[in-house]
Length: 211
Image 1 (cartoon, rainbow, N blue to C red):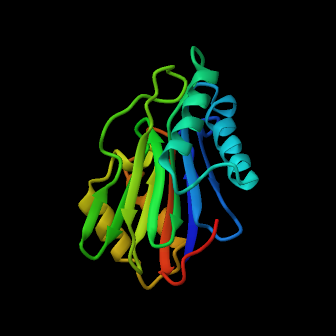
Image 2 (image 1 turned 90 degrees about the horizontal axis):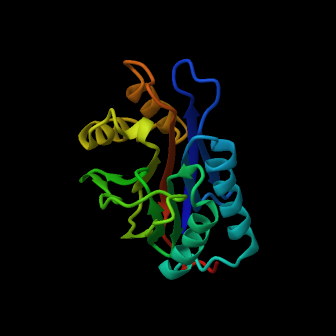
């Protein structure tokens, strides 16, 4: 399967640093993650996405098996317990499916002509709480589906219907325009928090890929 993936991130108004962090697999864009750190983000959210990228590149994360995601996230949670905390939402597009996991309130959405659906509704604790119980993401994908990963600074101002209108209104534009357009919309009345959006669009679903 083939996808395209782009991201945009902006610090809150007056913010000295952006506590959001993200990672995208640059080889094919099929794997991505967002972390929203709470305090000392460079040691928390930024560190977590770096570790995630290293894990993916090493090939030791079994992307199609949630227990593998869960074990890693619980190990990160335990290693940070008592210090700074971060959300995590990560996904991989594999063989016509979206798989992944999340902890905290950063969100994943599936957007197409039928609507905009939240894939991460069930609340759970952030990494670093010492009590994180990661939840799975598993959805079938179709051609032209758009998956969005959003930190709370980006999704909080926007209802799903507004997200769908914005995404579907840009279907003839390059996908790189979508994250920036959503940040413009979310921040139209000011940016009260750091905000990040990753957009993944399914270009084609063909022969199952090997990861």
